[in-house]
Length: 90
Image 1 (spheres, rainbow, N blue to C red):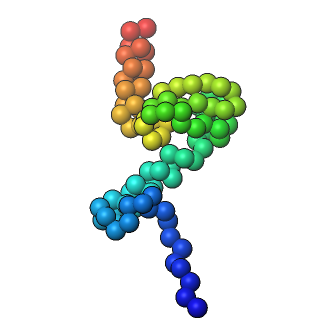
Image 2: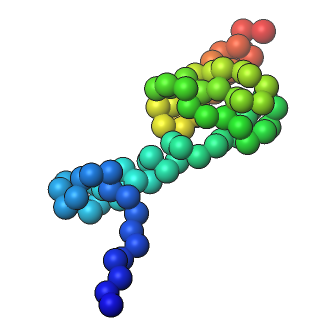
Image 3: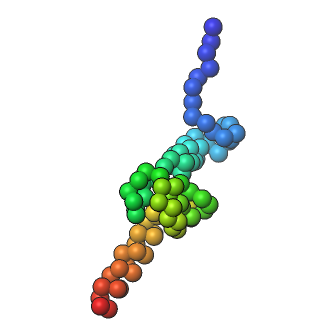
């Protein structure tokens, strides 16, 4: 008897848009749904509330971040430039 092949979920996309796009979407959604580490209490309890808004369920801190991860590359660049500006003015 034939068995069905186990595969990652495509969320109803089927064969459309190409394998590379569907694979990238799956990786983004998997990273989005996992729990991330909190910068304040270091617990692995940060989940996304909405686009760019993240909340730690342990300490309750709410902060802004990237759309799919708590910190984005552009956000890190902005944070470093702000810190550099603050240290040079003091």
